[in-house]
Image 1 (cartoon, protein in one colour):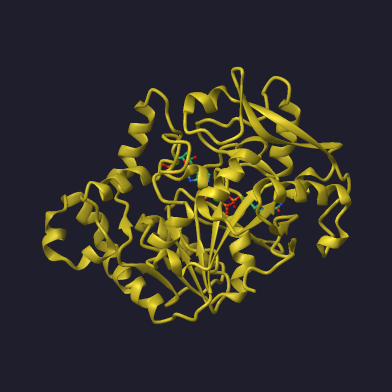
Image 2 (cartoon, helix red, strand yellow):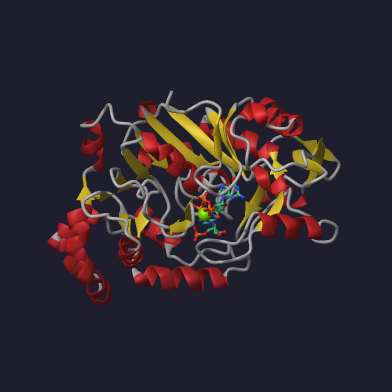
Length: 407
Ligand code: GDP
Ligand code: IMO
Ligand code: MG
């Protein structure tokens, strides 16, 4: 079985935690997009791990984890991450592989990324990891893939600075390189998780362009970046928070109003620890945007939703979610492409009673307070998609699986 786990909002939904939870039943975990712009957190007891490039299944000693063809890989960041894991006792030798079709991020791309974003009239607020530049070199057909490291002619064409940078990494990268298409084709019956980075609304095609990342963080990207055909994917899981966050610039219609909702914003940011894993930036926070979530479900064939951070709302008297937008004198129920419309959009909010009890100790959905069930069941009806997994804390164990995706 092949299952995709992707973000259904603007990233940081808790994909790392959910992949780690589901990876117990998988043999192979493939990260299909993005690069070191991602930050995936896994908490097991007192241990917290922040992963940027390595797939979130790595903490199980028996899993093979693969950096897919859709990724852009900075060798310096990769080997530093591996070293950190090894120092913490996570053995990685021989079981971290990289698709030979993945592209390499060079240091000068990182410099260009930072300079170009700073020079933009409306900066995107990139993570400064060279991501956009590497993907544009790729689409310009001037990029460098792992497979090219053994191609003398291509290597000879590189600028001397690029060669000097790559030299200490070439042999190690080659040793980790794999033909992902054949690897998966030879393991047809394996249980495979395809781990996304970023989220549906940061996807280059489907997201809030140009305020997006440059990879394919959509479900279709799992097929392309995972070197399988679209019909090989059995299920798509969309992870979303009980509220919304966004790092960097760009439209965010359900963002808490800095004038009237500043206290709520601070509460959510502090309770949910909403600070970026990669850049440390405070995340922008807002209400759950159901119009956007429904759009993510439709455009990614999401079979099953995973709600995270529901515990953050434990103490609130009431909980609100955005069900449509008011743009001028129009009520808009779909998620618009126009950045002008999204910037002008005011959320139409629906209010739900709060449950005012901690959810953390509930072991089954049946033990949930009725108010929490009402919030979840409204989301299911609105998105016409079941919420099969509920996360009520950052720890691996704080997870309620109503319906296992592996079934
Ligand atoms: P990712 O990029 O989608 O993997 O998410 P991040 O790791 O960037 O951000 C999610 C943050 O929320 C991390 O600090 C997680 O430890 C934490 N987290 C994940 N699920 C939950 C949850 O259900 N409740 C709470 N309170 N925190 C969670
Ligand atoms: P994970 O996988 C949240 C955002 C950046 C910026 C925009 C473009 O942890 O969910 P880039 O450096 O990719 O060119 O930046 O995308 N961004 C993310 N936001 N989570 C992420 O990854 C992100 N990866 C990129 O903040 O607004
Ligand atoms: Mg993250």
